[in-house]
Amino acid sequence: MNYKLLYTSRYGSQRKVVIFDFKREMMIELTIDELEKEELDLKLRQYIIKMKDQIDSGYWDYPI
Image 1 (tube, helix red, strand yellow):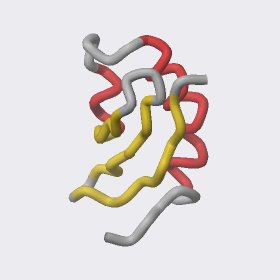
Image 2: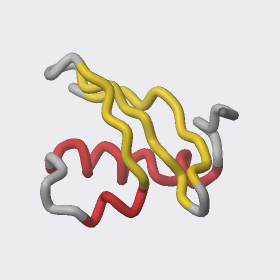
Image 3: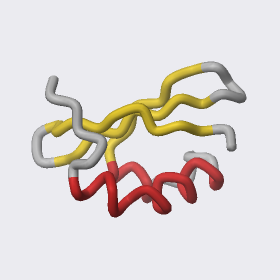
Image 4: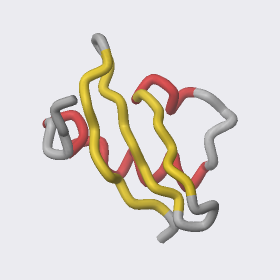
């Protein structure tokens, strides 16, 4: 697996997701509504969708 969810936080009315991409060696920050965008890698979108229940429940929340 190339991705690891690091944490999430509230960003206005959205939830910001921070993921580490091991293949590119970089952090990716996005909001859940950005899943609709076509420029996101398919595997990244699939990973986020797989984790969506935990993300929505606040399991990964980090207060910023």
